[in-house]
Length: 142
Image 1 (tube, rainbow, N blue to C red):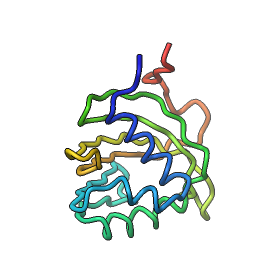
Image 2: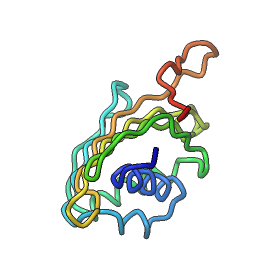
Image 3: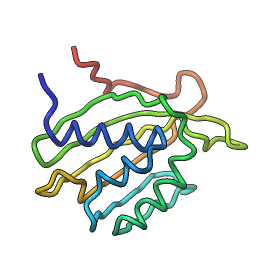
Image 4: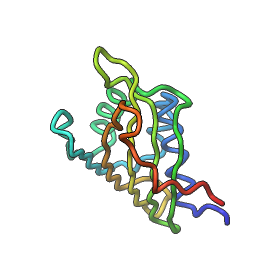
């Protein structure tokens, strides 16, 4: 089954910022982009912000810690204007900046030009203790 327009754009966006391609990341945003980030972990307070410059400032600070090429797409669904993706990736948020795995759901809404106007992210860090994490939600496309 082919990807929807919004899913294709959302995945391209994740690919851009996780590979530290800031020009491409910015180009995919609507001028008045609004984003919310949240976690159940009190160490990561999240935030709510509007506008390309604020978005890029926050995104580049956090995404610089991502290991390029480490994204695993677990599941996607969407239509022409909305996409929900579930990914994991390696990020330097462990003790002393060590790499850990982050699970992240990303909900996107596009404007009439196909640019991202809304982004809602929720995440948590997977435990490093073997056997403590579950991957029951994995959709491998088969």
